[in-house]
Length: 274
Image 1: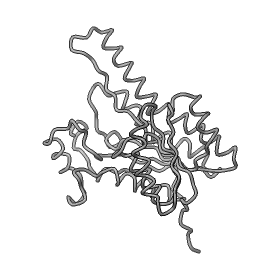
Image 2: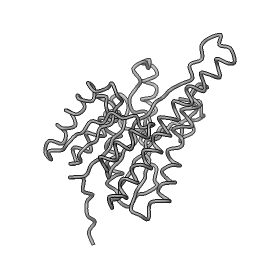
Image 3: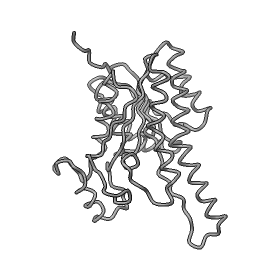
Image 4: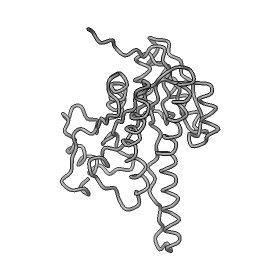
């Protein structure tokens, strides 16, 4: 018996947080389009100009298949936006890429009240974007698909550094909690909806792209810790590797509730060593 290849052509894929050129969301959208999937490209309101640039890149990547690309300006924490989005569309592929990395911004000399306010603000923002939006979007997408007699596959994006025992600094507790939950959410949804034909998996991002502010010595140090041939690094693993992994997980129809790291087997001797 031969296994049928997963068919992307004609399917619609929602990629969240895909409105900025050269970033991971755009790379994922381009990789899916190159396989023939039509793309719902979600971005924040006010980001239309950048999203239009991404649209052109995605259309070019899927030109062979004549893929369609629809820009979606939506706040995924707002139920009204979710009802509008999924009332009009029922993507059978959903990639939860949108995220923030927001530390508590505690000013020097802050009072206890100001310090607590800063942590609360950062906590709420991280949890809203990285967890609440992901959870609500998944719930609404499942309902839209079920109402149309369809099933779907979902990919959550987590953080390999957290999963491997890395410890971020003292102002990033809200981020850690919000991203660590990706693996548990995928397992939860897989256990509850897997028998209906839905799939939920996690891709853990490792050292993908250096932050613009990262000093060169830090970039070089981390590069040496990535256990991948140097000619494959530029200078770290790169967004395309994440995109290829996401598409591979989507195409593996018997994988459900799994976690796949894209971290170049990077490990640490102690939690703080990074």
